[in-house]
Image (cartoon, rainbow, N blue to C red; front, side, top):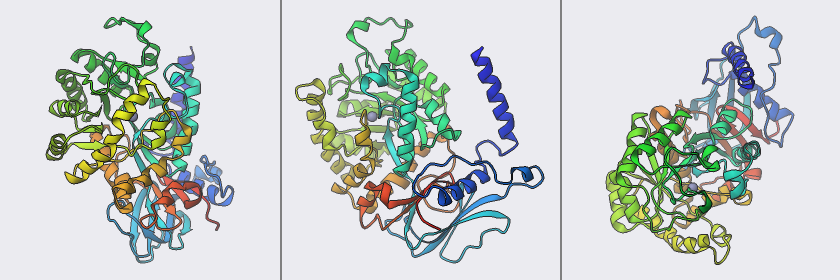
Length: 488
Ligand SMILES: [Zn+2]
């Protein structure tokens, strides 16, 4: 009965929205209206839901005006070049960056125009976190895996809004049941970043991501699922056939890429760091199923054995890679395999209880972080950037600071290119399964309008991105302004 009501409600919503805008195209009036609302009524805060059209009565007779945002006098970091442009102007129409020019841009006469006087500030692409777990930030591990779904989703929604307001307009979610959250964000129910979801972590029995208790053993293939599996948090698979099922289940729910754990991990109780988990045949089954859907597999892996086996099976991206050796780094570079490491903060290691299994495993992994970055640079491996924050709202608030900490190995400009233009190239690997077709991570004509207006020059002082509340004066996603603290 409830399903029937939901279905009917959805049908009505569909019919209503069909008269406003083609699906996938954000309505122009939303963007324009929200911009005005943010600028005039709520200068400090932040999230505005699309207001009703001011001339709703006239809407039946006149076509709604296209929404245009004109940024004047900004210096652009475009997500590619390691420098700012001269003072420029940028015009956003709908959700697309339509014009970038050092000359004056004349907005179309029939548009609903919001003018932003940049005052020489920096305009840059929205930030991208390539290793995020949107559902696993606020809850404790126990809540995340076995807690109430309603609570988990509401907590994740609040965190998603905070994530967007830190300037992260896109995240690649590499494990966790984020499909509903993504849908709610895309429908405008709640403010948050674009999400490239993987769905459940796919793991072998006892592998990284198998969060069952020993009391839940033995498992029978095809038998009842554990709570963590029922809610889509993780999925256990112990044969190529099971892997295919699990991969296809994630694709069915809208996964844009598939995540397997190819070796042991720090946070899971029963996977030694040195263990290689999936067999090559199992990994190959995942790669084949994902490939048939036009997308790719990424794996969690630390050791050379786990990384090399994954590459042999056709995996296109390695998460972490912190125990890799020279030969593995060379192989990754030769084969064009992506490396997605994270400059994990010390607090993540020291936060684990002394004497715990997890702490001991962290001690094994942590020294490898710096070495992996050195190898990535030495062999020019395609390198993404992400944070891998888990179970800590306080650490999530350090998201920008974790990005800034890349200056241990890179210039500020290199770090910011990594978190924008380069990360976007990794996202594009989702091919036809990309939920947001269009260019991300760059400021150029034709790209999707995810933009930050920054007080100061982040290429000179990268710590600006660690202070988004003060330094990001305007945040736009998909042409809509979510924050604007400039007065008009
Ligand atoms: Zn992770």
